[in-house]
Image (cartoon, rainbow, N blue to C red; front, side, top):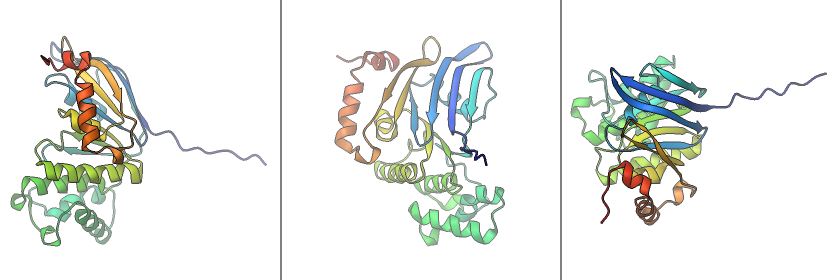
Length: 255
């Protein structure tokens, strides 16, 4: 009797020779990288370098013009700089949106939404509040909970920490690292914050805006994420900021 080894397909995001333009303006040129299962890639660079465009292409929020993007992850979700909550739904119903779309029963999705809401620092008294009654930080907690409650294989993040105070930023980053390590989550995110990228990433892709958005350099961070304390992040940031490609990409003038 022949036994067939049925291996699960490899989950990865492969970006090959991707270029993009809006009208007569070239935005991205010849972008290549691969995001593997359980890894985090951040995309950093100056404004106008095409970071958001690249993320939106990978997430199929924009139509691909040139090149190939192959996404074999089983499922994906999103968290943005703006929480983008539905104003007519309360906290629990906002968190449970993805579960409802997947056909999860009302009782089960409410239970799961409440569990993850508490994990992300919301209180029981917050469950029936509407977005207009929430602070910016609370809205972002809801946004992260909504993105992760469906247990995605791949998470797309668009500057999700940029408007948060330092305390909440560190708290949500810790929750995210726990999800990455406990559930083998993959993340592709864009940020202006190099320290944030060093804290969370396995690879940092540096985009340079001129003459058209392209990959200038890729840095790898090998230290396990839970071991990256503030001292490591500060020292690694100082080291990377001495790199000539970083200086040119961000148009820094180091005297």
